[in-house]
Image (cartoon, rainbow, N blue to C red):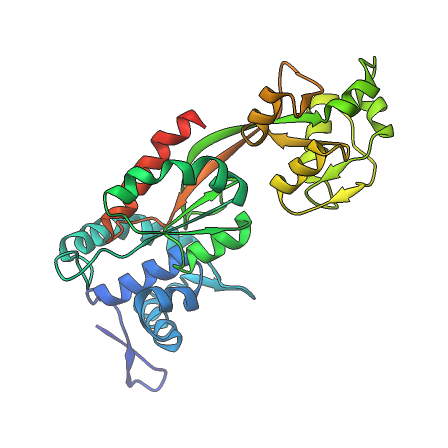
Length: 314
């Protein structure tokens, strides 16, 4: 039946009890997953005003608000979580049957867009991608910081992101990928000058600190976890590239904290010295993140499964 306005006439924009339009549900799911009308429009190949109009039409039909508009994007209202849970499987199954507009039979499979921390990509990921390239998988790899890369993932610019933390909310699917251990290191020259101090944390106040950023996120975390105290000092040298931090410390610039995978060779060769070997070192878990749903590109699944296997040896 149709609702009536206060003057008794029918409201043609709102139909109660009518079957839900699959196109409206598809648009809703895109907005729910990307967290943005603009990103959903880009993903669906529609204009942003069209997406807005469709969401408003669905809200009128359901007589419920689905999204709360924010300064940056939207957040799902409680009913949106319920609706998404009900429709995600059937819509994804339908999309898998229908297939993408351009299938492998019509032309080459699209490249897979992977993003993640520059250091992990260069040291662990890229050296192991040869088997996929041999299989004909085309790859486009982007280094960067986790937060903006996740924003780009929601907007449909990447297929997979290696993140340094689990993303919040339900718009992205994240699975644990690898654990990276942090180690306190310096050059042999500085290690010789330090000797074996009884109180290492205090002794290091006389050694220049090399860091990734001015606020010392990695070093501060190590200090809290291992020494149980807050680190209060300024770095002597900062460079937003952990490989460059490592190079500076190898050259004798001071001490730093690095992921073990990044300096394992230097520790083995003696170019770097491990200053401390705690029983419970700080660990950070990386996550492989993907937009929920079935990708139309089979090579996305190939890359995802390859990374999950390869990460066991990182």
